Length: 520
Image (tube, rainbow, N blue to C red; front, side, top):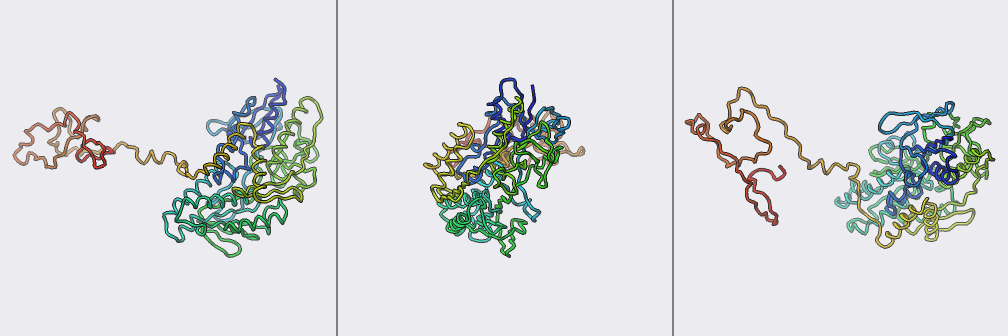
C-alpha cells in the first residue's frame, strides 16, 4: 500500500489529509501527517482572538479529532531526502528517526518575516500562531490593570500605547480589533479615558490594504482616525530597543506592546530538503501542484500553500504567483487531494485555478470592509459578511458551533476581560508559598552539650521530625555554671497535646503556637 507523507498541518496540509480521507478507497493508501503542533490554526480569526471576541481554543482544529483515518505525528520534519524517499522526524522528546514514504506533500506553511531592526527580535510579538494572539489579549488586559493604579505620566502612557507594524490585511485587522477592544475596556476603568490610550500603526508604503481599492482604504483610514487610532504612512520603524519606538519621521515614543505583521516567508525547514527553491525560498511547482525542477517534474512530490510558488493562472497574482493567503491554501489543499487520488488511479491531473472572490476584513465590533472587483461594502454590512463568510469557512460543524456560540454569548454578555497572563508561569503561585526543607545546622564538635538534651539523645542531633515544638517561656535556662541545678533537673518535655485553639479577631479558629509562625 502506497505511503503518503504530508509535511505540515496548516490549511493546505489539513485539507489535503481531510479530503484524502474522503476520496481514497479503503486500503488504497496510507496517509501520515507530521506537524510540531497538534492542531490547525484558522488564522483569519487571530485578530478576534487577540481582541477577546473568540476564545483561543475555538480558533484551532485538533488534528487527531478530525483526521480519523490519518496517522498524526506531533513532531518536526528536519530533513527530506527525496532521492531515497526518506524524511527525518524529530520529536520534542526522544530520538529522531527516519520515515520511509512513496509520495510526499510539502505544506509546511510560512513564518513571520522580520528585518534586522534593533529591538524587534527582543520586544515585538508576531501574529502567526494562536499562542501569540492569546498573549496579545492578555497583555492588553494586564496593562490596563497596571495603568489604572498609576497617575498620568510616562509609565502609564507606555502601558497604554499599542504599536502595530505592517499595514496589510493582518496588520489593519489586529490594529482595528485592538482599538475596539481597548475602547470597550474603558467602561470598566473609570479613571482612564480614550485620550489616555495611544494606538499607532506603522506602514512603509503610501497606502494600506493593497487588496482593496484606494477609495476603500481611504475610508478605513478615516474610520480609524475617528476612533483615535493613528496610521503612519510612508514611515519605517528604525528602532524598538527597550520598547522605545523610533520612526523614520523623527517621531519617538515608548510602547509595552509591539505587534509585527509586516510580511511572511516560507518555512525555513524547506532548506533541509533536496527540492528546488526559487529566490524567495519557496518550492517551485507546476499549476497541477507537482514539484518541478525547471521544466522537469520531480516524481511523487507535491507542494502547495504558503511554502510553494504556485503559478496564478488567472494572471492576477503578484509576480505571476498565487498570494499566500487562506483563500488559496484551502482550495489548493482540496485540489491537491484530488490530484493525488487521480495519480494513484492513473487518471489525468487538473491545474489549480481560482478567481479571487474578494477581500473581507473585520475592523472591530460592527465595523468591516468588503471588496469584490469594483463593488465595496463598508461598516456593519461588511462586518456581518466577514463573520458570515469565516463562520462558514471554519472547518467542521463542531468548530463552527463553538465559534458562532462564542459570538452569540458575547452579544449578550460582552467580552470576557479576565487576563490569564500568569499562565506563562503557572507554578509561580505554588512556588511562592511552598514549604522547603530548612538547611541543616552543623554543631561544632568542641561545643558543650546543651542542658536541654534528653537522656539517650546524642548531642547536636535533632529530635523526631513528628515531635511537637517545645514552648518557649521567654526565660533563659541556667547552666552548670550557676550551681549545676539546671543539669540536675530533667529537661521539660513538649506538651503531649496541641495547645487549645484560639479565636482571632476575624472569628477564625487557629492553634495557639506561641511564637511559631502559622505557616510552619
